[in-house]
Length: 211
Image (cartoon, rainbow, N blue to C red; front, side, top):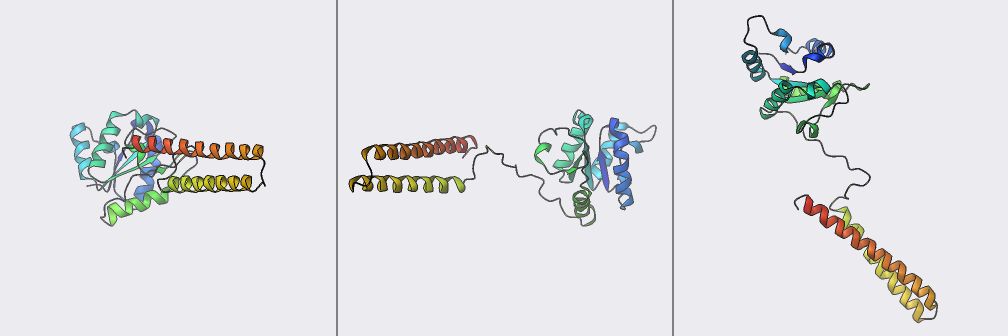
């Protein structure tokens, strides 16, 4: 039984070899399909090694993304709670793997520490892997957090009411002319419109998210 089963595309053999060598140098026993011997039943041996391995490491690439075998092996490992992954180029991972944590090993990146920590946890400490799901990174136009949006709307609404009361008081006391009062009212209405638009946008986002 190998410590680590490497799932990869055969077209990436040259790129995967250094990864296998490094894991071997760290004391892990490795199995990948280069170990298949002549006369062995190909499918049966791969399934036996996949099920017996303590951890399964998928080496994603453009080639691996288009490999039915890599996808099937990765899915089986994920179901068995022993799945790890790395990426060797800028290939977009298929779902659901795109939403899971991975170690970047391409484009000048080398996140060996992350990968080694995960392997130590599974293989040597005999503990299940840490939660694999990555939290999405909000973009510039992302919907604000649930807690932040109500606070923003409350503050804007309060500021609008205060401005309205101040403008009315100033006009009543002769400090502000009717023209100035009209301008101030347009400003208050503008703020109110923005608040209404933000509220509508938030409600739509919550509905789409199933809330």
